Image 1: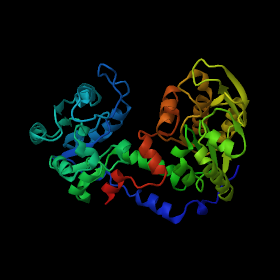
Image 2: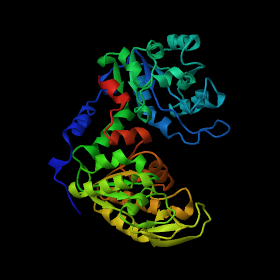
Image 3: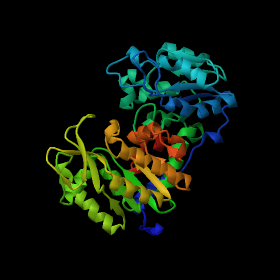
Image 4: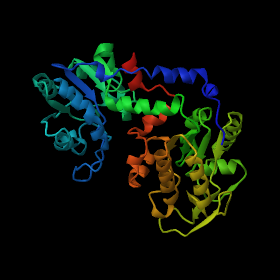
Length: 421
């Protein structure tokens, strides 16, 4: 296993970016007594057909920040989006569905609800809010001005409060009114990251800045095109990159393999070759699945068999990594001291093709118990680690799929930059 020279990990521009976002504006530095605080949370939680919350992970993640403000003697005004309303208010996307459960999570604290996020009802509710109380505003995305980053809309929100706190890492990559624009109406002493934002950044930085080696990234998912920039930025950082999921077959075909009807992005074959060549220059080992579980249809009850990943017959498609790949990947993970996992190894939603993903989840948990630091980097990896029952046995599970992906790609996240400016 190759272990890199730490001094040669980053190009100067990328390292500068990561150092810049390490500047933390923490709420621990602020006393919120008798202050009204508007907090951007990510309450974009899944609801069933009856409006019941089916997964409250994101709500629970915001509770420490809310309690800190309340315990200081401040008043909390919460704002969030929910779902993707098309044009104006839709009852199924109302944040009113969350009021009762939010009160329970806060230990019985009464949560007031404004049936608008701007306008008279919201203004009056915010003005009458007392220290120790919580107000939840209606869905921000009932207004197109939110996603447009509209300045006037952001100012109306800012006018409710003395202090702005952003605790919505899941939307930090969006330059929306409530995540970025609003920050310009508060000086440095009156805006900060919440505890969740701090935690997300600090844990991502454990992978990015001077990680303990060997460093292994496990990258899966359907398409190479979705992970190009991530792969390119991880090459100089990682000692090992494990590739699984549908994207593996583009690399396998680029190396001359036969992938049958497996997902393969023909337009990205040359780029896959360049990544493999660059890995050699960067002294990074890339591991592709030696064998695969293939099926004759994209179906849970399709016929299946185990074959070499570079010798898949026409009419068959790779839908999971095979036992040899699992064994090899487990060995690499077991030797690692820092682990990033982003993307499943196969179509894990179907039981017949879930073994590879769950085996990787167990390997990451085992490595963590042996002293490795492990970051589950959002998206389907979070669903997989939760379904495996191992979320408590890894170091950190990110709440922000797209935001974490862009963070690791080295992109400037508007929600983070706005607080530091």
